[in-house]
Image 1: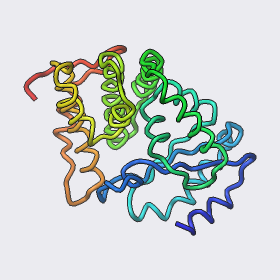
Image 2: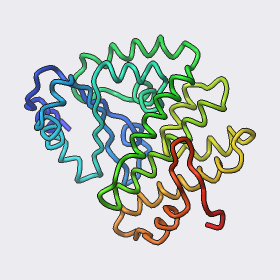
Image 3: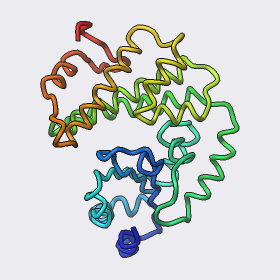
Length: 251
């Protein structure tokens, strides 16, 4: 870890940047195929430099020996907007994330978050943000099966999160975080939301977990990936502008 941080110190940047460590590896409930999840908080002027992200990815390369590295980036203003909108990903990072490299901005964001989370959850703002994310992933054209599986996972997760903000009153911060953790989405919808989650929603939850399982299979050589099952799920789902339709009920 110290060598990685030393490598990060040599990354050329116009302004200070930070890496926030979050996810199952940070929480301590990871499996061998789990990602190392990092959120890169950096100035837009640095993110526009073609070699900036490349240098950071190179510095994190030693972690690839233990598992895939997932790096998501954003700037100060965009992250604060996500946070104030109660976006599940941002809430997850604010509540459970920890500084991995750098410490200039994240402590200030944490202070703001500690005040924001005392306010009523703004489901309208969250819904607007999530619908933008849904349209973004819907528009992606995957280049390979791995990207296709990840795209479908994100679309299903975002759709379920948006449903949660729309139909569940008095949401707590813990529920918002759980909606960003793949292993906790199913239990939350099946148990906590058992009265509200009817019909297609519960079916989508089950299909979501099948997609997560397929993603794990792709990363685990000793657990062969079922391309046939993935194609069946693709044939079942239609990602439309405002909803996800299940075309077949005999899967």
